[in-house]
Image (cartoon, rainbow, N blue to C red):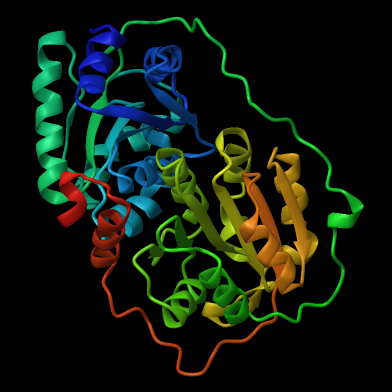
Length: 386
């Protein structure tokens, strides 16, 4: 058994300062110790997939980052691990607790996952090892993890068995800098949508200078249309991990406070991971812009309706402590939103349905997009060229 500081201090010395996670009793000493360390940053994610995406955003900015979770939540993380980290080759360190370890008594809900955790990591092509249980093993464990991540661009996992880390109490208490608020009547919109997604994205390109901003386009037609309008080095097109654009953007914005980070989301994607709105409201900074293009359908899969007509995303965002949030159908409101400086902020822009004819797919690979974005923002990390 080790003390939490036996791992955290060497990890901090090797550059691991950004941590995101979902609590597990095995992880309590780690989470408490990171929260109590003023040199460390911990983001409490709504689910494990968002924790992975937040840490990945920091890694995209060139930082070493950690995502922590119970193995029961590994299923929530499969989507970003397989279609974000693997596809773009962005490495993060995973610390995964082994609940339901064969031969040890545990709750019934952990039994199956305890049997298959390491097999799942193997299937995801994620190298892994057991979490060190003595202080003299920590340095070597981190050296191996960094070597694996730097040469492959893939995450590396340390699987933590019960009793690996001694208990540590929480000495400090995190407090959110903002409070929830209702959406004002003047911020509601009941007018019919007239603006197309293409018109909205063209306005985004016009008002997001390449030298001072990063634009993340959600998976589906949003990324494809953004590419077709203008393929710029400050843009990233999500090709999978649906719903994770906002959590990736959050991690990136926290690591790059000097850049404006604009996440262009869709209603279907936002519905998939709405819990991240609360995380953005709690942790997001002034440089985070969340543009939600709401056409009420999953357009890239045939136009099936979403439930967005029953949802005010702006109202939810305001209730989750976004500093500014409103609904609109007007392009001039989008312009004002992009020029604003009071984030985290959301604009729910209701858009007309329809796709431009002969819409191309990006002819740059996800790895190329990652490489040029990291080079463009000056993110100096071994995985920028993997």
